[in-house]
Length: 449
Image 1 (spheres, rainbow, N blue to C red):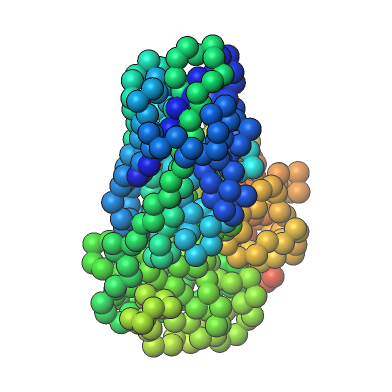
Image 2 (tube, rainbow, N blue to C red):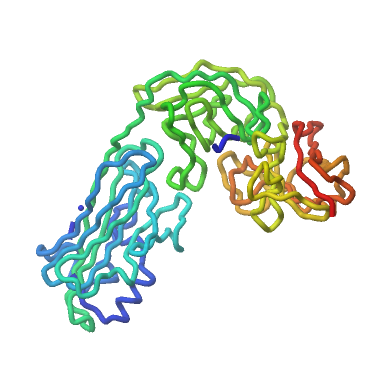
């Protein structure tokens, strides 16, 4: 597969301040979907409700967003008596404010918290950007400010609502009088709404590993053709693209339908789309099409291509353009490859435990839907046979065979021990399942002891 703006003031004992700063309560930005709570709710309520003191303010300043592009959001809190500052910021879809929009980036001044708990990455969950304890700007008069890095969602999601709450604290810090809380909301529009100009030209769909025609349920596939994206644009997956923890079915203003169902996408460029076949894809001929600017008045659809899917389509991912399988040594991120193929690689030896990666090996226990991310092991359901250098591996030499945990549910992983007596040189590797064998040639380099 080719890799291709607003207002605030506070005065509380330092230890209390630090307790709040180091374990900041989340859902305090005033979002109605979060219950409308602010920093004045059980945190900094000594002065009164949010926005009670008209002398202060909190502001959010940034430009409208472009899908998938990182930008800076300036959050500032002001009050004539303020001497210490804090904030909390969240970004939501304007048409569903329960859902996160884009991703914040942790920096030396800004910390990102996930809902319900824990620090980023939040994997598509709701996020809150807030100050770090060391960035409260103690003794800075009248105004505190933070530059927050935010990456917009990868596609046109309509308007995005930014909510922020801020606190201005005065001196003396050992007083609990004078906390002033302010809130605001800013709506961003999409500067780069989907506007791909040409109808897509779909030529064929192939296995995402072997690049041979066809695929199977849940397998990774590649669609080949023209005008899938503006020339020179290569759109990979980012954290902001995930929807409820799943891979998106629209990426870079592109969608794919296989058998009438939207397919999860992982990569798009002008002549190639990498996707996952839906879990319910049945064997036999199925209609496939590419859709640009999906759901918009300027939607463009390719002609339908009829592609034959199989029950199994086993294949290894490779270090292209070689025949060397994409494999790593067990417990290490060192490629099993000749240095001429991968500069960081080295050959395996008999007895080494290595991990092989592929797709199209069929159902697992437990089962996962297309686009899901398995949190733990999910083993192959059907019988299989693995051979290395012509030697069929014993069950004791197969440590794991199933979905790769923490990756898309179309990626399979095989942890195996290299048998004695094979090599030296590039030795063939194959896996057979459901009467279908992985495509050849597929090899790993093995050196003698």
